[in-house]
Length: 144
View 1 (cartoon, rainbow, N blue to C red):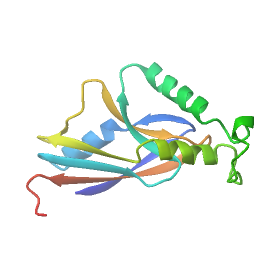
View 2 (view 1 turned 135 degrees about the vertical axis):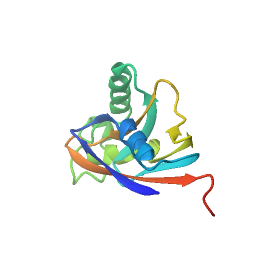
View 3 (view 1 turned 30 degrees about the vertical axis):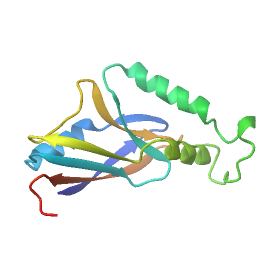
């Protein structure tokens, strides 16, 4: 089973789509298997992260902004790829540091996420984007 999730972002930040993934698995009557998610862009990432306290997302965004500041920050003067704006190359660096795919076990049609875990697209660009996340579910009973 395969699908693509479209996630509209409003700029840098984390965008949870756990419900969309769970709803798709439920609608497909998925059993036991493995869900693979892959973001089809080079300037955002995928994360499994706490979804109970929104301060976690605030702090993660702040940490990665400090770790990799915009290209117009004096500490980033070595960057060459700046044509697409001061957020572009830093977005590529962040995406290189974080996962662009996730594998999540599925049991009886439900993702085996922990109590406080959610699935997020981490947008690294400043302006809004429409992001695509390819999803593939492989049942334990599927033929290789």
